[in-house]
Image (cartoon, rainbow, N blue to C red):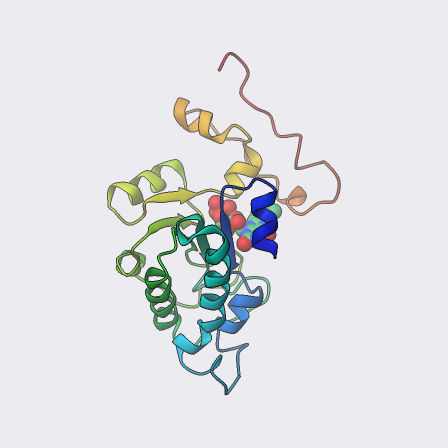
Length: 204
Ligand SMILES: Cc1cc2nc3c(=O)[nH]c(=O)nc-3n(C[C@H](O)[C@H](O)[C@H](O)COP(=O)(O)O)c2cc1C
């Protein structure tokens, strides 16, 4: 139903959120999933609900309009962990390749103060996936370009730099300096931190 509504609302596609401690990630990580049925146990079983959700969304959109967000080593705010994040990530990528999803959007490492669950060789896992691999977490223009050049990623996603720089693409084009992120307003209520970051002046 939600997938159908996104179509009615005019979206271009759907990214299924299977990262950062939310429901599908809770099924995937063995610190949260202690089930003994077909949805627990092996990495493939723990990915089962993800695959079923992806299939349901792909029934509406077609798999080429469906992507998945993953965070195999991110403890996130929910402090999830897993005994073998690499095996879990590989199982997820293998299944998502089989389902022919368009892209994965991968939070690499840890996005908070806690250490990453494992130090994965991201290039190796990128090779396990047949679609577009979007790398995320802590990238700069330079490190993003390096990842693209090395074939470690097909695209790079930016979070905090975009929050602080509404014109991030233009700044990258111009090699202009970036506004620094103001930590205090990142999760603030109200408009402050959302609408007050400056854009570069002048003609586009
Ligand atoms: C204020 C803020 C809100 C965020 N909200 C979400 C969220 O709702 N869901 C999510 O998966 N990630 C969320 N993130 C994480 C970002 O999408 C991104 O993965 C993270 O910031 C790392 O990328 P970066 O180093 O380019 O910022 C949020 C990050 C920030 C700073």
